[in-house]
Image (cartoon, rainbow, N blue to C red; front, side, top):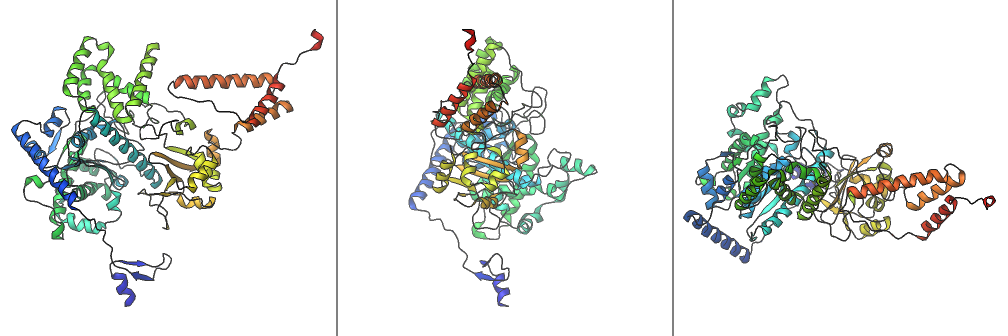
Length: 639
């Protein structure tokens, strides 16, 4: 009886994970956040400032932000009348969000469209949030799909979430730069964030959600959706998880409304049904709050959730841009190279470029109008398209990168046209270790951070020290530096220390790396194959462990790999010469071919600075011996 009562109490926990029947109770700890008078004064001042702005909008002295969004072409369909949304945005500093399911390891150009009005709202003082659907991506949005999505492994899902998270952080950092560039002064009340719906779906019972909102959801409207009708008419039908996807998305919205005052959802053109369904879920959840102290206000229509969709983004043939359409332009430069991203925007037709300038840039409408006038004088120069490409890449990758790509594009096309992006996308070559090197002499930031994903062999990860793994991942210049960084706890690993499963596959939390034994690295693998390391804030590696045979077949090498050092290569060549395996002529031919290859690589990347490294004494001695052996022998009989 005692054990049963203890187990039933709140705040009870097992003393040991291995002992299921031993329980101990402790008081429920409520984290309290103390709000000081200074904070309350700031809140009051921000509200007073907002009400002053509302009066100016009503008097016509300041433009309503919703009118700005309509002028630039972002508003397609509205959930709630345009008048209601316009007045709501005048009266209240509401929050808005855009949800993105990480079903791929990168965002693409199509994702930018709903994000742009969110960025504009942030610059005008509204709360703005991007929500990564770590939980909803496991279900998959059925909207517009004729069949269920292929399941994604938990390791791949973790990789996708990590990459998308850092891409969104990079975009937000560049939005801050763009705001300053356009004369917007950041205020204390500006709020933004990157959220993940795993934070509530992994902790809240589904039964509680169904009891709160399930009773208010009627099957009629849910069954009347076009996607549901099409799928039910098909032999495969639709799974229950896909059917309740709108309910999950609506609950996400409610959690954001509860914590961040998010009253608005912005979605792609195909998300209108999900937004309407989400509004029903939010209202049902609000009405069913059991704790009156936590109940959200529902006084009038200006307390209700609203939303809108953006227009459909299509290419020149009318096909939708997307991850599965075969012509996705990825924001990851290692999936779609920077040159091809720039070329994509330069290649936009003349009759579309003005609309795209309004939608994908923060340029004032007056500047766009003047640009179009200049463009009309000589359309062959593609002035508007080049401005579109530069401004968009500045948002995605930063101004420095955009300027370099613009210069490269001009140099290439001065010599002759380069083939355009194919319908299947660009084939990116296998990863080279130079992709993982940080820029020399510059701190690593979100815009110059090296490549994230890589593969390493099992024998290295499970058989060598963590310092060697850090060196191999390109996070240290040597094993000794890797050892020093680990000792100083300057390298972080995606982990949750002290749990049986070191890290939940759907949540990322970083802890410092310690100098553990090599076999202990196995405990930090996600799904037995994924290792995530981080140095600083932005230098991340998502390492997939592969078999030694698979790594050898890939043809890749890593820093510190046995047999790949300069001294070892020279010793190997020396042995070949002495044994007669290779002649000096053959060795010279190989060396010349390698030199030509190196020159070609340098020419293809004109902006990569390289610095000569000082050779060690051992390397110089072996090179001298090789020179002696490869010198042509002089025949004394010729004199």
